[in-house]
Length: 390
Image (cartoon, rainbow, N blue to C red):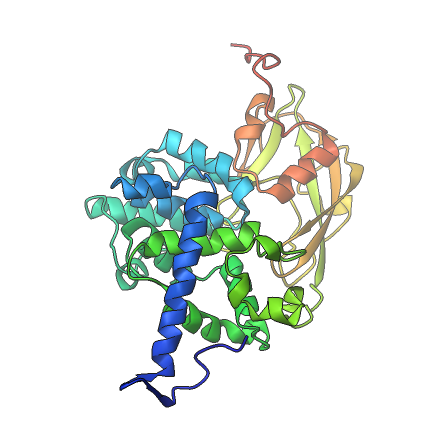
């Protein structure tokens, strides 16, 4: 089916006049109505979300929880976020509590979610909102003035938290719209076109539920592979279904190979099992996170890869190689392990064995430690945990 809004030519309609833009709006309203009807029955149960039934009873979302979940969901799956979200709201149930928390505690709670600049922006945003009475702005323009909130997040908070019309476009929505209208333009260039379609579809009532319905449709029905088109409430309007090739959309350009970087990591252990750590600089990759000593690799240059580059003498032994993929490059680290005596060198500190799992260690550093000491970064079970000696 061709999109109804390809032309704005005036046409006759009975004794009055209407434009194809009017028809487009009517079609969009029909799509929104059917999508909301589907969402009322098939919505996902998520810890930050209120249900359509609750919404109908007058329950309104907590802007803090919506903001927190949306920041966590940037570049992270829903399943991965659920546990982190529950931990955060138990520790810090509102934005004032989060603002009052030490930054180091926030980074530790975030460890494992990746994209650590989000955690720094999360804390900065909480500080600013708390300083203004703990109330989030309710417009896209004002929300975008806050740290870490861009076009998508501001639209999502505006729609979901405040039920104001806003075009919320994430990866799921891009896929749904690309298929619905058979958009042949590569996705990297088609985003303005996709947004324009969504803007026309957003209903004046229940825009927050509409935004979540679009996301749920993409996540559960209009999936990247093997979409379940027979169960889709919009299949009668979907031109990709008519063409018989929904998986062709969205159209993507071939991905460029990521550069491969190399370096070394040094896992030093004390007799009592403590591991030597240091904190990374606040700015840059993994800023403010905790790490074992490594060589000077970055996204652009390699670091040394042998035990000769160790930051201090020790009985360094090769413990294996680990690999990790960042957004813009891939990394291989040669891991070395040694037993060390004495005080921590300047800029380093010892973390006791039972405290390692609570450190703000990014995934790549957990991999390095695990290569040298299997199980070291795992949280001990309540039955196996031992109290440290006094």
